Length: 275
Image 1 (cartoon, helix red, strand yellow):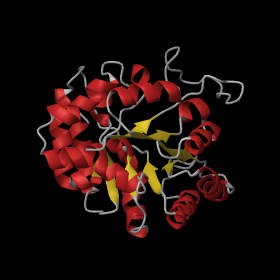
Image 2 (cartoon, helix red, strand yellow):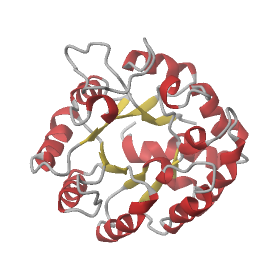
Image 3 (tube, one colour):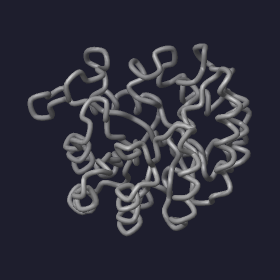
C-alpha cells in the first residue's frame, strides 16, 4: 500500500536565498526544511508528499516550492499559491507548471473576501487547462460560493483543504453539515487534515473521529486523502507525524481498502499519476 502525504509545509534554512515575509510564522529551530520532511516521512514509510506553499512564511513567493518540486519530481508534488487580484497570476501558474512541474494550486479568496471572484475564476480556468489540482482553503462562510464554482468547473479536480477547518466545539456540527452538503460534487475531494488541528486533546484525537467517519462515508474513500500538517511541531504540537498517520492507519475503524485509498491511492491518482 503506497503512503502519500498530501499536506506538508516546507521552510528553507537559507533565508537569504528564500527570504520570508515580515513577521513570519516560524517553526521551531531546525524544523520544517525539506530535508527534515524527508527524514520524518521516510521514517513512517511515506514515499511521496505534496508540498503546500507556506503562505504564512513566504506569502506569494513560490520560489522554494518551485525549486523543491523541480529538484525532486518523483517525491515532491509542488502546490503553489497565487494572488487572485494579480492579473499576472494565471500566466505565472502556467509557467510554474511548464518550467517547474507544479501539480497543484492552493486557491484563496480575493482581497474583497470573495471566492467567487473573476481573479479566482481565471486561476481555476488555467488550472483546468493545465490539468492540475486546485486546493481550496476557506471557512464555512464561503461554502455557498464554492458550490457555485464547483457547478461551473465540473471537470476540474478540487480538494477541500482541512474540510472548512472543522474543530471540536459548538461549530462542529454546523460546519460538518456544510462539508457534507458539498459531497455530491464528484470532482471535490476531502482532505482529512483537521483531525489533530481540530481536536481538543492529543493523540488519538477521538473527539474528531465521528466527524471524520461521516465525511469518509459521504465522499467515499476514493475522494478522501490524508496529510500530515508537517511540520507537526508547529501545526499539530500535541500530535506527532507518526501519531497522525497512525490515526488513519490503525485507530479509525476503516476497511483495508478504505485505508489504502485514503493513505495513498487517491493521492497518487490526483498528484502522482506517473508513479
